[in-house]
Image (cartoon, rainbow, N blue to C red):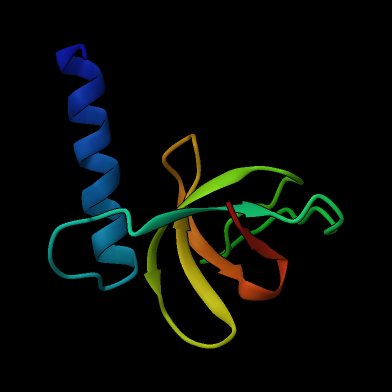
Amino acid sequence: MALKECKKEEKADREFQKKFKFEGSINVLTQMMVDPAATEKKGGGKNLPLRRGEVLDVIQFTNQEEILCRNSQRRYGYVPRAVMLHL
């Protein structure tokens, strides 16, 4: 990986930790897929945009309604559990 890309990812991770008050290292617990039948959402604020069939990295199971995830563009946000499927 190029040094520039690595620095960019580190910066994104630091911004994530600050925005979500996340402490410790960022570890992927599992991967889950957005339900292909779910409606697509733009996201915004702390919510991650949803695309049907997208595979997301699960960072934290926050509560019964939401999961903290990261998408393939290294963007972080909350996703409703109702639209997530186990792989």
